[in-house]
Image (cartoon, rainbow, N blue to C red; front, side, top):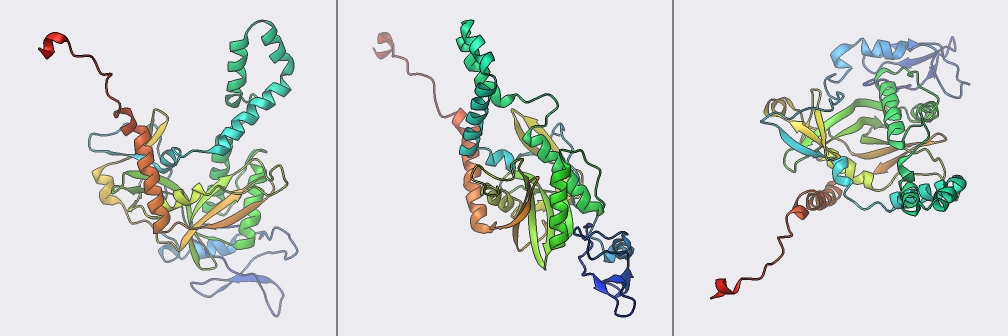
Amino acid sequence: MVTLGVPAAEWVADDVSGAFYRRCPICGNHIYEDHDPNDVDGQPLTTNYADHYLSHGDSAVPSPTLGQTPLDGQKPADDDERMWSVTTIIGALDKPALLYWAAEQTATCAVDQLDTVRAMVNDGDRADTIKWLRDARFRRPKGERTAAELGTAVHEACEQFALTGTRPEVDPDVAPFLDQFDRWCQKFSPTYEAAEVTVYSPRYGYAGTCDAFLSVDGVRFIVDYKTSKKSYDARGKATGPYPEVALQLAAYRHAELAAVWRPRRMEQFRRRYYLLGEAEKAMAVTVPEVDTGLVIHITPEHCDAYPVDCDASVHRSFLYVLEAARWQFQTSKTVIGLPLQPVAKEDVA
């Protein structure tokens, strides 16, 4: 179990009574609570330690204003800077895995709906059949979440767990992911500084929301959660994160400003923008310092955390991707002129 701003502490057995306690790092008191050392999840039966630690007030807890949920669907004010989101920028990269996934969805549809395909072809609807198969990747069974929707739900559950120290009630789709995240937290006892922190780079014109800032064994990490419905690939190997997460974390780490208000976002042409006004810029604080990055990859059957290089050299690579996105979104729309027209003979004369 984790609580925002509450550092991990080892369970210790009292020499006399055998009861278990944890030592408060601020006042040094021994905080006793019911604990079964044979419990595989290591869950305390009460939350005395977290409650005691938080009772120390400002000396114990970082500013509660850092890390607030963004507001979507906002309209820009006249003085707002509109900044591309980091994920929108990275979306400009080629993603071969998505092509494979789309082809797999089409093949799966053709095999599972073979009678339907045959009937459509026999009815002479060849073009419609091709379009129906092509668009299989956009269809899903009624009530089933998309991968993005499931990922968002898992993110929210993990964030709530980290912020409150209390496991939230979740639906059966999310529960296996949260179980794995819970086990990982029990194993590594992360100390959360903040969660859901929106950062801005007015210098380069981008912004984004990182999932967390936390420490493990004294190492400070900037964190992104990644989820996957598949725990293992076709060869039986555990699935893991894609390397593009390094670009994402480097962008967040090297941004100049962090929001202490509810950030504003908007979407246009399927691209996400963050809005930043002069008053907000004046309120902003610096992005928390970290030692490196961490991606926590969560599946229904395992949760693993991978250190991620996100230093200045990786940030420089992100800036190249930013320029590639600028080419795709803006410059490429203006580089082709109108067709040449022959000059009339009378104009030549």
